[in-house]
Image (cartoon, rainbow, N blue to C red; front, side, top):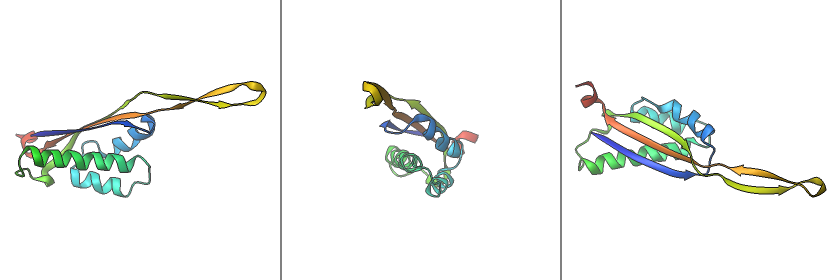
Amino acid sequence: MESTAHLRFLRMAPRKVSDVAALVRGKPVGAAINILRFTKRAAARPVQKLIESAVANATDLSKGSVDIDALVVKHISVDQGPTSRRYMPRAMGRATRINKKTSHLHVVLTDAGKKKA
């Protein structure tokens, strides 16, 4: 059984979020949440909440019959969302553009027992 969760328009650069996502790719859910709890990156908290949301989706989808300890992060991807453009005044009447990037995260959890079968 697979369960998914999506987080869209996260106000962090996808380059920074993808480093954190790579830490938990392919790991069991318990180990992934434990890794994220002690990771000192700002992106660790939203990724942790997303994985916990996917676990809740799996429990709701199977009506409580899923074994949470058997769930594995099968797929986690980070895509770039829309960029907000702001301008900062500079010397001699000029302006420079500041890009405020956003990220879209997608996670898929699967049951490890069915994966091996």
